[in-house]
Image (cartoon, rainbow, N blue to C red):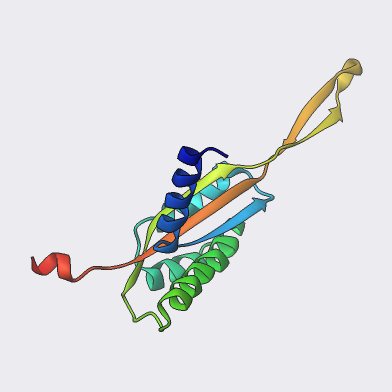
Length: 136
C-alpha cells in the first residue's frame, strides 16, 4: 500500500472513532421495503424512533429497531455513560443493496421467469444533540 493510500485509510479510521453507528448486513428483504422503514425514523429523536418502530406493522421495522438499540449501546460504550432522555437522535440512516440470489421459475411454453431474491445492508448513525450551538 502506498503512503498516500495508507494516510487516507488512517484518517478514515480516526474519523470513525468519533462517530457512533451500527451496521446490519445481508438482511433478506428488498432494499425498497427497508428504505420505507428507514425514511420513517430519519432525523428523529431516539426514544420516539423506537416507539415508531415498535408499533409499525412492517417486518423490516423489527430489524431496524434492533439495529437502533445496538447503535445506542455503541454510543453508551464509547462515552462510558448512559444516554439521557432526548439526548440522542438518528442523524443518518441509509440502505444499500446487497447480494441478489437469482432463481428461475418455470413458465408456460418452455420459458423461464427470473426471480430475484434481494438483500440489503443498513447503516445507522446516532449523534448527541448539541445544546452549545443553540446558545451561541
